[in-house]
Image (tube, rainbow, N blue to C red; front, side, top):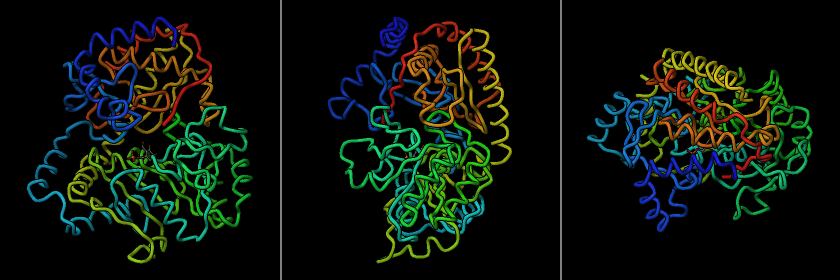
Length: 456
Ligand code: PLP
């Protein structure tokens, strides 16, 4: 990143965040890179948060930020939503984990199943656990071994699905038949090779790849609206085609709705009009409290049980998470709440287009529901190979310039998107666009880096 604008942005960032730097110097002695999730690391060092309320986040130096990251999409509620605070405070006084089922958990299970059109559900704690178990359930049910996922997509940090995640071109293989490239050392090749990788939005290539393991394909897993390579809307017919392919091959279709599940009234499945066999939820399903779910159609979870198909966890369906889930369903993830956020989202996306047009910056804005993103390219992104052609350096410059002006415009990195929570207002959208206007002028003419750098 030789661009002088980066140097200036870093210097400004450093001058605003000396306390964060101090904290980071200490943190990195005890933890790799001083963070506890690789995605949280930021050059030259990450800022540390002191507190958050509504749509504002304060760092350790006292700077405030208008937050559109919203915990990487886990806060459809915004920060410290009063209804969540009330529910969690009440629950804490009544016990945070029982080691037995809570008497309100069946209500949460029923509501989740009804909302997503599923027959049964098991709750767990993180998105990682949900997709990990969904794969196990699919393999146990079908008695088959292979899994197909889409190139670029991220489904949590576990070995089976840390394959073909944001691969660099050197390891990615042919676009029409991507390699099963492990995304981390420590993943055994014999594990990675059971996960085959296909290009998103390309039904013909997906079918060819799936057919290579026709008799041994347990599942196809996808985000119905991919939100880990920017923001990609599936093309007409892609998911109906995938549904029919799975049916013909006897493979289960898993929708990873860890992000999308709470961004549409009936999740991404409702958005694309296709019913999966298994569906995973996380993030905003309990708005800021760790909770996830693996929901399934009739019969698929019948064999889950002791000495049969394994699923267990000390914190599964703990009452804090279930209380947060019920409060989220009652007060946050309502049709009205989501519609309001969607309306603000349309305004923001339209504003992005106008600001960049006015400034003469080549940019493509994608948005739908309550989220969206900008990529610095003259074309939309329809799969990972397209994403590799967008200008990642310019995305990061935009991000730092916004940070330095008190705006977190989206999740960190060009592969992320913004989330409009129920606490954002028209005034927040106005402020976002106003800051963007001052940033856009500085983005014109930034040299294109050629290839984007992204990793887990
Ligand atoms: N699936 C998707 C689509 C995600 O975006 C993520 C996280 O960002 C996960 C799974 C993993 O969830 P968690 O970080 O809670 O393990």
